[in-house]
Length: 481
Image 1 (cartoon, one colour):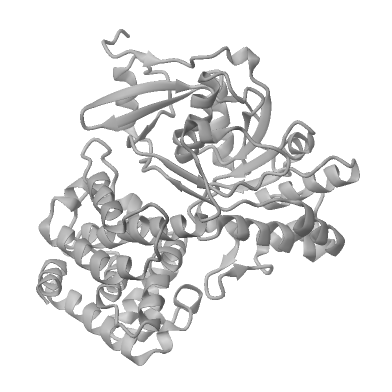
Image 2 (spheres, one colour):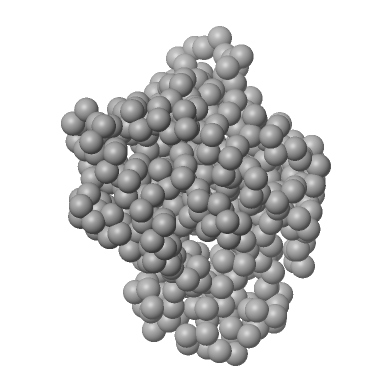
């Protein structure tokens, strides 16, 4: 197929690349974010010994391996600028490790001395965190299984630990473990998972991990929709109809990292990565304002049968709801960020959400609320309460999520399961229609908020009103209040 739109190819000799990073989880976000930064760096002739070996521990990772190895590990990345789309073939990955049930090939690759960073995008829910305590859960069946079979790990963390054990025995310095997932303190969370798993079977190894292995915190940001027929059609328009896994993304990207890489790192500051000791400030800003904002527009859109995020932003009731909650309940509790005006940052977020070319879906934003709410919304509720404010808008967001989980939109349309815990959420949501405390009583999600009678009363009133009058009427009253 011919096209008038040129595709940018890697601007370097890929035969010169040598692997220095194993990345676990080759989803769309990684290929539109970290891989792009490295591709830019290699184009400068820098860091050529920091190429990526792709890896995964799930069945879906095996399918991704087949797709990418079928095209020499090149990823198509299409930037969706309203002024015009551009496409590039990203060549930062040189191979994809075989995906095996017990991860022997992955462990062996990570044990190689030239691998100095192991990075991850395994989703917010993939770190075995107990939402009620915010801590690593050593009782999770996956973790218990890996602790009993440390030489045959099934999880990413078990594989990392097995490789670290091999390196320690061979007196090879530890690699740095770098999370690229949207989690508060993602480095600390990753350290808790790796060291916590080690402590179940080898306390001495756990001590060594805590003393010798670096887990830098980082903040990552780029809106990257899921791949479907629309995205494949875009790739075809660029003459890449044979690529089954193209990635689309917004033009904006950001990466903020702690500079804690004892085994070395690529000079990513040359391609726009910010290295700072203030990562926590950046990540709290992003998680509360952007990810929290996604949740605020997701569930009313889902209940109003709106398909796309930019369409939700064009709905005055949803935009008004977002503006009011962000400006009254979220931005006031976000600590200052060096060099950033929070109001300007929110204005950028509004523009990004409104980009029609991205065509991100409301359903994607509604996905996995049981893992996302405890990270993106509930901490803002708690912080408002700590400062003596009742966060009515955030509680309305919680009521909208509950209403969404009942599985029926305002028009009567069935909402298909959209959470790993959908059956439980649906049953609890339906029970909450008459007993709202049941929803807030999910302590693994809400912690002790359900014990606050004032919270229960406000939440319950919103939930009842949504059931009686619908989303539009409730949002209109809230915005006017």
